[in-house]
Image 1 (cartoon, rainbow, N blue to C red):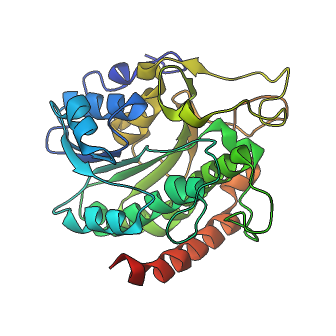
Image 2: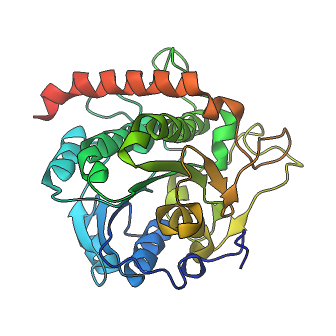
Length: 303
């Protein structure tokens, strides 16, 4: 079948056997993370979900996944999670995220959305790199958003220290960072046989992502914009599952997907596609170096 906006995660993996494959899904206690973990497990994968609230995670996913504590905004928590992992890792789905929060900061002073959505997942992927490299054709999946089209990464003020904090600008920056991570990780890790891709899951009904949400500014969702994919949770998890485990994308890396297809360039007035700055190789390399320095500076405090 041809996969598209209405395809479900279960349909993507129909007939696919993941026996012997090991997977981690962050934020797997609810929403599309939970559905991603469930469908991977149903196909035979050994799944671990990393969650802030372990008890809630066990209630939601304990029947089919191992549940482990992981707070992406806490560098020490990320380090503990990665260090505790043993053996190969075939699939890493960086799914957890927050959106349009009030201004909040981590212990290091990092803006919370950038710290959670990008830096936490960046640190996790780095910490698990050896496990991914020892697996057979490992895959890393970065869940981004169409919201990335509203903001590039501001390298002069990543943490909103000099500019006024704006929740949607911070969200857009963090989602662009997710795509730039995939671009640079794909380049750096290709020799290790690791494929890294990013995706827009669509606008998903029935998740907790919008719990902080206020009305977005007109520039974020302009009147007359078209192309938004509104989905239920099984449909919203489909592109994540495709990139995590489908043989149809074997060998594909460094790309951005939506509706189970490679996305085209973003066009003004259409809320789909990928912004040119999010695929820029120089931007991606710069973000990698900046992120590495930020984590290195935080490391002594995490021990």
